[in-house]
Image (cartoon, rainbow, N blue to C red; front, side):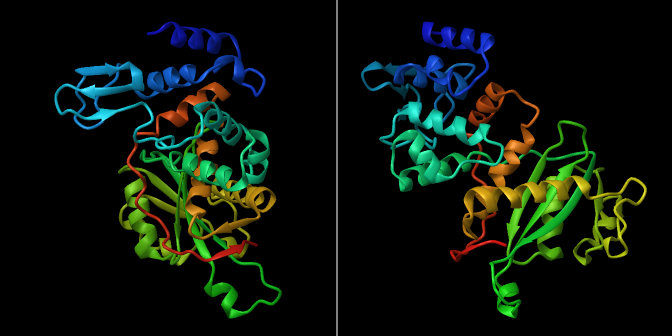
Length: 314
């Protein structure tokens, strides 16, 4: 471990990460590169192609070359920072602002904070959101529910509801450290919901839902209980959907207040952003900051909504 890395870890033990102390941790671009290497390869730098630990250190370019396969790479390769002319200092500040604000930060506000234009700030935020999705399976008792985003309309016409998009969510019932996963889909039916639940929950998990028809076959694979909201029933024994509905409330209030206009094409990224903060809400700001780096080498999420229509959501 280098002198810079040791100094950063020592400061982390003494201070909480804030906007004031951020510049004390990362005083130069070299500090940021050292931190990126430490977070990405905690057990030593390995080739991103073959995983070999036999590397040449190209100091002039701050890069590495694998002795086995000949692959040349640098710490930015394969990350949102790759091929970016923006200094890592600004990227780290953007990451801090995105993860520390409970409801997120708009691209206009971020542009003022970083001294860049709005389009650059918008692209930076989307690049950071790409790393925030969770691929781990959930376990235990879980709550499943869906919510809908609909364009604002002055009259309730059929066209309003034809343009709506759904988000299916699964949250663990665990005190303090429950996790959530979400999926954006145009057609929220059993053909989409059941494979998502099957891939997200470990075998033996139990599921609580509302009385929606898309969950009527769940009992064939999981212990399934439900509540009947049409009869004002919010709890049926241990079955409830209060936790997932609380997340929907926070998600919609944040989008209306901070982002205002969200396209269906990018809605999954915004859901991943709010899910990331929900899944790390029990962590300190330093821990949340470090947690983001663990997703850099994760495979990209394949389930996306191929729609490019833009409108404000109700």
